[in-house]
Length: 450
Image 1 (cartoon, rainbow, N blue to C red):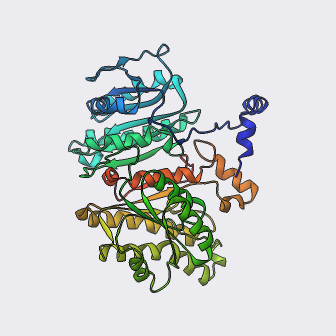
Image 2 (cartoon, helix red, strand yellow; image 1 turned 90 degrees about the horizontal axis):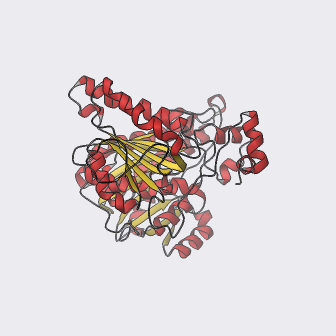
Image 3 (cartoon, rainbow, N blue to C red; image 1 turned 135 degrees about the vertical axis):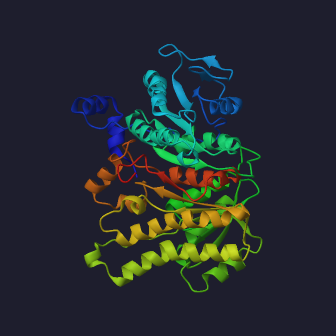
């Protein structure tokens, strides 16, 4: 659905008017386009501690314009504030800030460059997880990075984003995959997020088709976000198996034919759904994306048992039951990836959605609880929590609520199904086993929740 306010705000007359009135002036975000060769098209700036040297070693794969700012052990052209090129990407290693007194380095590094960011610039701060620090002062300093990162993300303009990645010892070789995602337009609608990378034995072999040789199952795939996920997984080289309810079979089969995949018409809440699904997948799968979901919104005072039961059955119980069946049968192979489509409603809550928010919070809890149990098989499980995404469902929201949903984020606009799909595709990569048991918000840093 078209966002007419963005169209107006980016017109010559609208730009002057919204500026004069002090209204939000969101920009059109740069998103990944077919045929693009490198994650970063522009200058990459590196700074900070020793992890920046790790990034420096892979930087030529990311862009052909690498610069350094401040002391560092990597070879790069020096960047001078006010004289160097506009910055499309920035990586700062804050992992060696181990005392509150050292946190001033954050201001000293970032303040001079903020006016030199190109439109849709992407910033990543690297740190070490606070719970790995023996010194309480060091743990405090590393935890302080979260407040700094989330706050600075809200100050960025012109579509800029910022993430904080905590890097465990031994996970340094997984930086490339994470940076290829978070420094590129694939993460256009993700900002203010904190993730942790742990060691992972598997690596992407071909960055042009990172999912080559892998088979992915997507539920709720006939339309909307599910269809976008299927298209993106296929673009990245996966063989896709698309599942939806029998009533959506015509759309499902058409999409599967276009993507060279297979379709399964199945009610995921049926008692025999697990057995049927396993029968449909005799050769096994590597990725399962639980996207199927419904809403039945009412305030709790008016919530019928039928509305409550239907949402919990589809959104929470079915993913649990089907995933367990795929695991127990060995259909989901070792080093597999499970991605659960949650929602920021499951994090922040939403009026009239006690059933929906409970189901989505349950998925986040499922990822957190299951992650250590699946680690022995090299399987990761994560939740993706979209915010306001432009879909047929949100198009039917009343105008005032729709506009509020769009503007109540740091990026001042709704996301696209592609934004969710890019996050799912990244979490499906072999190297993204470095991330497990976590929730990644795709919400433009919504004002709702943390």
